[in-house]
Figure (cartoon, rainbow, N blue to C red):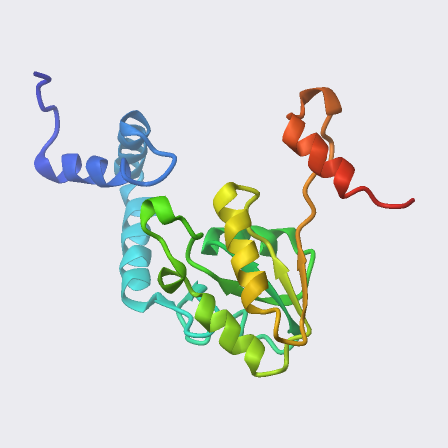
Length: 201
């Protein structure tokens, strides 16, 4: 059994950091040591920021984004095209699309995908909220930006079926060759999708 080299407070810090995605036990120890070395410049401000975030962060009642205001910053931005909604699985997907800056639209976070094997059904996702937003009549296009997994495709089909009665255009992200990708390194599924989604030049 390994001997303890730090007090329980530091061990607890390491254990909590190890639960952050991308940080294993070793990375958590390095991160904890870095924080301790930079107590005044980093650890204090970080602890304060985390306390404020814990107290103020909430889920947007309109789109499902996380922010410190409700409705969130995205939903209250008057410069966005309010007739265009991009549907994503998770908040991380929303943030990724915002980093790309490709579209000036609104979003809708589902909170996951349909997965009967995991016990995730339509009532466990924010699908009803999306249908309610479309039913208001202001939306002209829904962009399904779900992952190209079996669960993502099943979720996309479910949403498409339930929006078929509305006068709204439903599109999805193209799948295929990534920018800078080489054909020889791509899997067969990606190549097939790229051929099916070919465009005129």
